[in-house]
Image 1 (tube, helix red, strand yellow):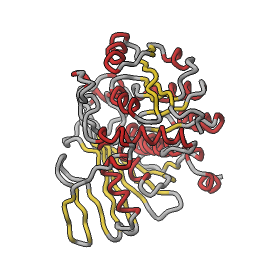
Image 2: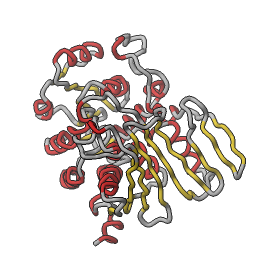
Image 3: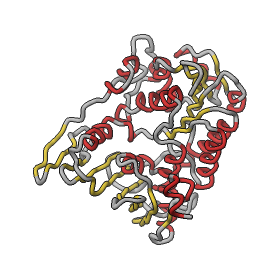
Length: 379
């Protein structure tokens, strides 16, 4: 448990990361202490806009600052693991945007460092704190879904024209938005996966990763459970409106994500379908940050900075993520997902792509991603 009431947070990466600054500033148990960005102009622009005095262009210098309790990493995905590892070694708690890492070995190092240091790690997976997920979670916890029979999720996005490391990225290497919800709802662990690739992307996109598939679809077997799930991911050359979705099929009721953005999702009771309005879940948050589930964080009266105006996005999840991370530190408990759970979610995608490249071969989750009972079952 933290000795102080307010946690000194440093945000690293100020593109998407800047979205979280006002939330930390208004959270009753957080102090938005420092920001870090390689570009001095961008650093000063955002620091001036939000009145943040402590600024770093060098991440190593930030980690040497004894006043920093926790870092929230929002840099490009290939930097996540190295920066998380460096922060843990420097004695800082870590919140990191998805995915946790790009290799199984990197996931292992993070999990082991958390165990060695006693520090907190949380992967900031947006879907499992979205209003849609919280709605289905409430139905499940109230018993309205009955017994869960199957889960399905998809994340389809056209990345044509995106620069650098995105070009030709294997679909399942960025799969946490669809893997996260199917594991999080029943608080399950993946035991093994089997994945098939389908179709073919443009030839010039293939060489960087050696991944030819337009779509990868993966079956996940849950550990110590009769449940399995299916997740689908596409990034290139597949005609589909952007979609992050999940479906849950229960014995009493089932939930299906809308087919078209901004339309209502569907609840099935028996054979009777019904459109449903998803409520907001701001009431689960401290009053100071409740408005961030609906409004853009940069459009309040005291922050009229045009370059920051954007929607709350991600199903209103951002303040819920901040609250879960900060609360876990203040209360001395594990956040969800913690390091091991984050590794289980992330390794599903990494090993799913490996399975697809091997024609659907079954790939077991590493022991370090399993709880004690799961690890014992594998040894």
